[in-house]
Amino acid sequence: MSLKKLRKIKERNLNSDGTLGCSVCHQFKSPDNFCRKDGKLTYGRCRECRRSEYDKWKKSNPGMAQKANQRWKDNIRKQCLEHYGSECIWCGEKDVGMLTLDHVNNDGNFERKNLNVYWTWHHAVKTGFPNKYQILCMGCNAYKSWYGKLPESKKKLDIRIFSLSDYAKREK
Image (cartoon, rainbow, N blue to C red; front, side):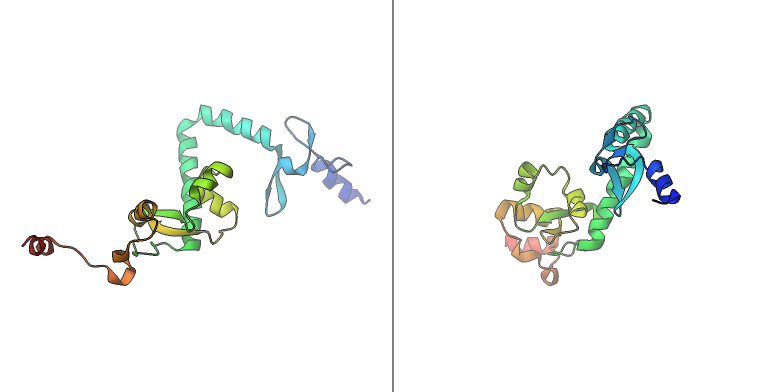
């Protein structure tokens, strides 16, 4: 083994049996217990040590932690909207605050209970944007959950603005 390779192994705290050593707790653990990005190890700390350090930081910096969490959520949401489209597939609503991630097969309850999915947007990114999700506005999503189908009257090209004068004509 070359000297360069030995240095890299020592730097990563790689044990001969394939386990890695945490730079904080100094325990050897399987590589699955360390964070990865694009298949490469990103930190010399195990997940548990990173989590405990983050929890300490979060307690001492609540305002910054809240902003960081919001940025993370906004980024996840942005990724989903870029992939699935940034408007309601049914009525064409484009207000980002009104858009939701809908389960095409209405299996959201199953997903939350059996797969222990906390936040669907994050789950979609984590699983590689599967085709079981679609973007709907809150109105179309609520209608679909109540009636089991999307409303007939809100198709993209059939949108008709209802005015007070139309309402007055109906009353007669």
